[in-house]
Length: 490
Image (tube, rainbow, N blue to C red; front, top):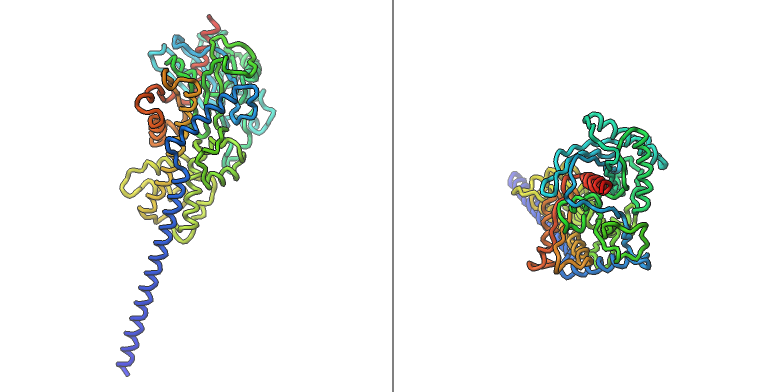
């Protein structure tokens, strides 16, 4: 009897071990299948996102063509608005002294004070004060007058605190406006977009009249020449240091371009003849669209679910607002179809726009052996724990694909702009870039520079010089104030 029991126990134990082994093999096969499927998703995304030099040239050529079409009165159907945005002479580098500027942003504005001492010297003594815009002004769509009154009052306070007594009545105040983010998270509670302030040259001067009334009312002895986009201010900064500066690019949460165009190239009616012989055009390249762009299923879904479907397509490839969102969408599909993060899809991975571009950059640029930064960001942002180094490497690879594509498209856009100006083969062109995406995302910046070099080769790439803007956020208003004051005295 005891022998029979012993035999039964042995048989049962053997069956249990065999069953467990079968389950382990099944689990391994299932895991291998999921892993291979995840790799297929990544490879397909990388193929669809590819930007070989030939494609970049096609995109550059189409951008140059669309620019020319947008400058013509008959080109209203072009997806580039090509706003004639500024006529006053830009800085020469001879301007000097202390100047003030205002940089109006989405929910706040900056007061900037700085000193200029000539083109061979950097901008110095920079002071910035960020002032929140009261909610009662933000929620009122007809609050422009109240906004300008508030700005004038805060500027008067700032000047009095810093003891400025030398401000002349004819000194100009630079006034620039940053593009607010349209696709704001639902939790932000910000509904107001200052769309009325993103205007062409004529309307910008009309707004200046209202601002000047507020300045006079509150005892600020300065005047605003025109309200302009801050990208134009960055162009003014580039021009201050180099006569070969022809364009400025904003690369932050959103994107924009301002460049110098010959009036003879513009068929649109101008409000006045520019004294400098040059006109600043706002390219509005966020709206650039082409069948040549490397569109993926993730871009299609992002656009369809955005607040502006079909609009600002180029920005959705290259803007900091969208890079992290594309990464999130790829990771979500890999989690759903390939169990990248385990059998259950992490709930927070389903939240749109939860992954910001600075966090994406941190994961992408993680050089630790086991991708410790990726591990930390996955825990903090998506509450994803217990990932393996292989999984974290996949996450970093997705970031790399998205960043490389975006940066190379920016490079193609810059080459297309320089080609439109006819400067690739025979003239040096300085392009100024402002924005956190360029300043803080090192790998993105490197991909951008390398794409321009690949497109132009060693012989021509030296003709396109890309540099960071001078003075940082909002400083363009200082350069505008200086050139406008100098022009008023001449």
